[in-house]
Length: 115
Image (cartoon, rainbow, N blue to C red; front, side):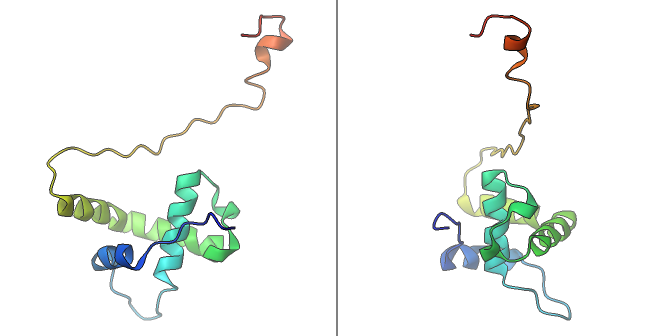
C-alpha cells in the first residue's frame, strides 16, 4: 500500500518528550506503532484491519489502550497545542455513526417514494 501514513523524523522529535520512559523490556518501534494508530483512526478501521506494515494489530491496540489509560495521548495533545501558542479551544471529534445495512432500503421495501 502506497497510501500508508508514516510520521516524519521532525514529528517524532516533537512527540518524543511525551513518551513514557521504558521500564525493563524495550518497546517496539514507536514510529511504526504510532503511525499505525494514526492510520487506523484517520481511516476508521478496526484494529484487525491494520496493514501488516504496521506490525501485529494486537501491538497497536495494546499501546493505544495502555497509553490512553495513562493519559499519554492527552498530554501529547495538550503539549502540542501549548507549543502552537494560540489561545483558542481546539476540539477533535472522533464520533461516527454506523447505520444498519438495511437502513437505506427500508423506504423502497415499504412502497415509499425513493428520494
